[in-house]
Length: 157
Image 1 (cartoon, one colour):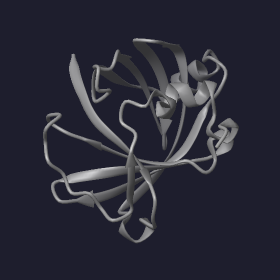
Image 2: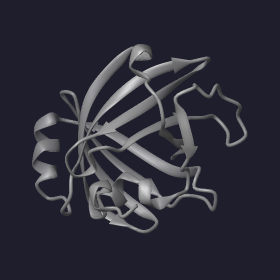
Image 3: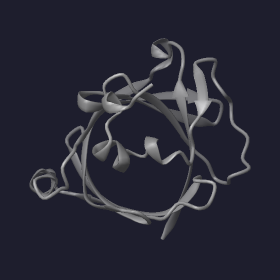
Image 4: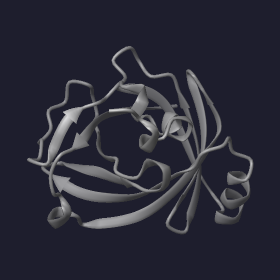
C-alpha cells in the first residue's frame, strides 16, 4: 500500500493567475469512521474508489489505496454514500518541483479554499507561495470526510 504524505493550508490571497489546470470533483464517503475512510470520487469524467487509513499523530501521513473505476459505477456508488457530498473545483499550481492543489469548495462548504501539497517525506522542503495562509495539516475539521458531516458554512467564528 502507498503512503500519502500531505500538508494542508488555508489560502489567504489570489492564486488565479498561476493556475495551469482546473477540474470539478464530486465525492462522497461509503465509510468515514475514525481511522479509515472509503471514498467515491468523480473527477471530470473519471471515477475513483479510494481507501485511506488512519493519519499519523502529526496528521501528515496515512495509507492510501486508489483505484480507477468506470464513471457509471462511481455515479451508482455515490448513491450508497453517507449523507453529505463534497463539491469542489481543484486548481493545479506548479511551484518549484511540486504542484499545489488548491480546492475551492461549493455547496455547504462554500467559502472554504484549501491548498494541499503531496511530499515524498514529512521533512521535505517546498516553496510556499505568497497566497498560502495558516497550516491546518492534522486539523480534522478540514478533512473532506469531516466536511461532509460538519460543513464549513455551519462553523461558528
